[in-house]
Image (tube, rainbow, N blue to C red; front, side, top):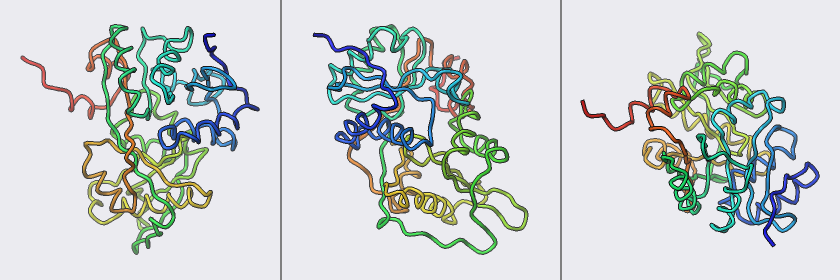
Length: 307
């Protein structure tokens, strides 16, 4: 009998969490989004499983416009994540009628590298192109990361969604259309940390928490780099995970050696499992970036076109 697509109800979320927990750290992204939904800190994400109660695969469904203030970030373009311990079951879910529209761009967030072959296969079969950002996962426990002292003349405090959304967006090079809505909602719902100059109130660096149980969007303004401020900010925000009995996790672009060094120097350990941010798009990479309002950073990394 062919397994069916099942929309997980609120009452069924604990059972889904328990299933995902068996496959950590590969399932971390969806596991923590489910966990934060159960805790009541995140809303809007819907989860579909292949089979129920015998789960074979799970994916994040399309967020309704009325269900989250940042729904457009996940809808335009379609942004999701999937997990299955089986390539065959992952493929069945990805092709299930009504789950995804492969004629449109799709971003797959923090998907275990083990599922890359099926994503590449299906994207190619659908006539698409692929842009892949290989990531490593770093993780720290409370014992790995003691709190650091704040330098004289500076102070740490939470970011204000109304005042600091643009500050984070301006200093984070990976934004696209609707990222401001996403940042503002994250700041409303989760802990964040900004490092401020006491003299003039300038935010010289900051980091926020994602619904997927990781830290991200870390920045330190250029003139303040080399002072250990990035480590200070990350180690301080990590305490919010430790207080809840969770580990602190980040996904770092594999080729970003300076970021990897900063995180390992801060106390994070590199996890052997690897992950991908995988983008399926029908147009060229440049046309895709332009269509969805990506920043100049992305265009600068494109191969130079022949004159």
